[in-house]
Image (cartoon, rainbow, N blue to C red):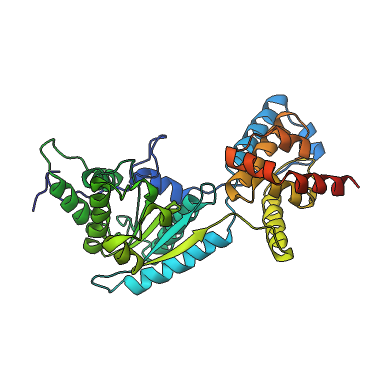
Amino acid sequence: MSTPASRTPQPDTEDLAPPDSPLTTKEGWRRYVEHETAAPTLLSAAERAALTARVRGRQDDRRREYHADLPLVNTPTIRKVISTSRLLVQLNRHQVSARRGVILSGASGTGKTTALTQLGRAHELATRRRHPRDRSRLPVLYVTVPPAATPKMLATEFARFFGLTFPARATHTDIVDAVCATAAHVHVDLVLVDELHNLNLGSRAGAEASDQLKYFAERLPATFAYAGIDVESQGLFAGTRGRQIAGRFVVIPAVPFSYATNADKDAWRGLVSTLETMLRLHEHTPGTLPAMSDYLFHRTGGMIGSLSHLIRGAAVLAIEDGSEAVTEELLELVPVDFAAEQSEQLTAPAKATGRRRRAA
């Protein structure tokens, strides 16, 4: 049966993604899944000295690009989200309704989007291994909730991922039906919905958009995973709608790293050490960053996003100024987000103590 998009659309997964394709399109998502950050090889001092200035400059550019796109660290939150969600995908596979899902909730900068997209990437790669010859499969659908979302806006975001277009006379029902038909055709079994906090459940439109998500969850034989900022405080679990959501979703908190116990400090130091092993700098001494664990924690507030930004920025500066090593002086030159700045001010005495300890 034809739809307003002329017939049940069949996404062409062979299309190359334009440079500006976001994750919320099938082309951008596929590029993200297939992207691998290859670490450049460090040359010896003699090999580097033998290079022409032009070749050396190209190699430095490549190393700058590598550090700007440093590989992700497998944090406890990412591991929890992936293990929980993949179990739910298996349990939901033969459920007709009332499928269980996951909600990832926490403050900004705690790695929610990273965990959500890493879940999707892991699931898609596993699906490709099981069906190596089926290139028409799109097992993962990724969308973000637009601000002040209405049901039609939300349905349009789902349609945009598949590249579906509609005539001006298309109704909301037309869009929903086409999305569901396409998702079934390409075997979607994991739906990722980011920026859930953009749903204003206090408004009629927001409540109806929430109902639209529930309707998609009923229509699509898929596991739904949501991520948003402090969704509990947004009223997501209030009222009749909230009780339904609370009864079907596992909530995984995304929180900053703690620094209260020796075990917390060891976990943080391990994270910093892992990031350091990824650096490709000629003069950096291993162990330098773990020795600055106190400073790095107080500078970032334990936020994985802020830590990654800080170390990546310092590595790029180390290549640009020729020092080829991450130092506290270079780290101080990297601006951090406002939340990290506030945390640094609140923990300034501990930060100063850490600095005195290192100086001694």
